[in-house]
Amino acid sequence: MNKRIGVVDLADRRCDRWLQLGSGGHPEPARRKFLSTDVAVIGGGLAGVCAAVAAARNGARVILVQDRSVLGGNASSEIRVIVHGVTKLKNGFADRETGIIEEILLHNRFFNPQQSFTVWDHILYDFVVREPNIRLLLDTQAVRAHMDGDRIEAAQCWQGPSETELIIHARQFIDCSGDGLLAATAGAEYRTGREGRAEFGERFAPEEPDGWTLGMTILLSSRDMGRPVKFVPPSFAIPYPGDEKHSKRGHDDRSIIPFQEGFWWVEVGSDFDIVGDYDRIRHKLMAYAYGVWDYVKNSGKYPEAANYALDWVGSVPGRRESRRFMGDYILSERDLLEHRHFEDAVAFGGWPLDEHNPGGIENLKDPPSFWHAHFDRVYEIPFRCLYSRNVSNLLFAGRNISVTHVALSSTRVMATCATMGQAVGTAAALCVERGVPPRELGQRHMDALQEQLLRDDAYIPRRPARDPSDRARSACRLTASSTSSGDVGLLVDGVPRDEFGEVHHWASARLPAEVVLEWSAPIELDAVEIKCDTNLRRNIMMLKTPRDDRNYAPGIPEEMLKALDVEVRTDDGWVRVAGREDNRTRLIRIRFPAVRTDAVRLRLRETYGAPVARLFEVRCYGP
Image 1 (cartoon, rainbow, N blue to C red):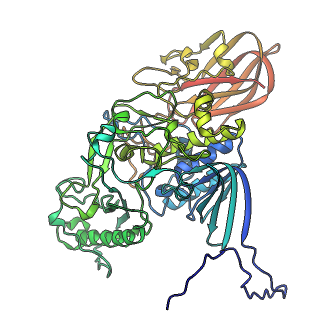
Image 2 (cartoon, rainbow, N blue to C red):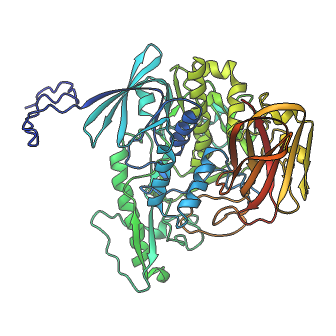
Image 3 (spheres, rainbow, N blue to C red):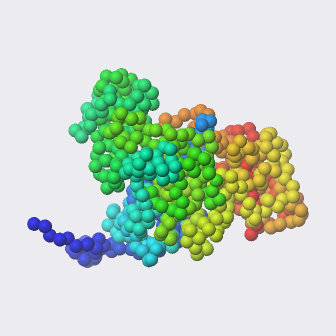
């Protein structure tokens, strides 16, 4: 017999029969809290972490909501996907991301040299909680948006371990959760599936639109035990028909080697609703993962696997695609391949157009991935793709932005998502400061947004900095003690990296070295900001199998500046006002008590191993 069940108030605990022995009382649990903030960031993957940190550093009060016990999303120890970004250009080198995501990866190099994924979780935790303007809520899911007209008034959240409902009021909301439940319940327009070829003129799109989304994956890893180890598959394993596979399913003709890092192609997609299919797909993925490992161990085709045993198997699938929310612009395949320039560019990417087999492991006749196109240089991502076109105070960053399915095959990788996160976090703080919604910010204050991003060491292709408050730009003379490459004048040209084959750096001939900026009349200064070299052509993400080659640096970039002094010229001569002994970032911000001077001298004393120092930018600011 069916009985109608009404809507239940999850925070109502008047039914509790609680005897609290310490007090002898019968309290009623307080299970509802109301919170207020400037910016609410939903989702604690790398896009959400960068958004929260950017907003907080730019003066906003931030609440960061993450539905898991750890930060990092697909990069966390729960899923363990490598943080790729612009790591596969045609020339074989990187042109990697700077700003907050680089700072995170360098933080990891200093405090997690063993490259432990579980320690990495806490590297991210440390990176967030050290920001005084951020309140972090773990194990908390935003389940519904409460609206006031076309704007979100509050996010209704549920924190499972504390059995608490949280109502978060904010002026700006950023959905970086990937699936975008908050944005969906706010009524933000979104689409799923694949566009037909004609809609955006995409040659890699299917002829007609369909419902397929990129699949989810469960990874595993193994290690050599030094002796033969048997494997008996669990009851739920699905046998892998290895003889039926496409010849490209794997890394070479042996297909499954190297098997130590797991099989990214053990994936299952959906042709209708990958969010609603989650539980069924998760079970399948675990079954397929163990089935492939059974094939490796017991088919007799991989005798080199005899001594290997499973070291870790994921239980949380990593998602590549679900909802894509619509902004004022939809980025498409042609925008990326044609390197279209956008006046409102705020982020960039360069991962290949990497569309995975829509059927995943359930479609073995096709290759696991279609590498449609590789890029020879980075492309731009406009701000109009990062806010909702019909919910006025909603931004987003990550794999849920306003792109086509084909464009998403590139923009979805995590370091690229992180650049979007820094952009929308900065934008949200400016929206709060100036009292405008994101669309108006983009229309009336784009220059301010781009300038702040550039100052914070985000990179925007083909957009040099021109900050009028930067006193270095008005210096009448720049000199250096020695030069091996570049021109010291390039330190104020507004381009913070060597760009599109053009030099934009100055390098010393030796160490120690000096750079001097002089003004025709004394000025007030209280800060110097420097962008040093971290070798953006070599990657610094955490790898499952670390290596040292032209593409990957295994430790701290030796080119990075470690120790320096800042001196100013006064009536008594040169005076040291500040310095750094153990610098750990590319962007070096040095503050000191305000001083009146007509010259600044940077004394570059030591790098992390390189015999010369290379700088890309010097800025000076006054009170």
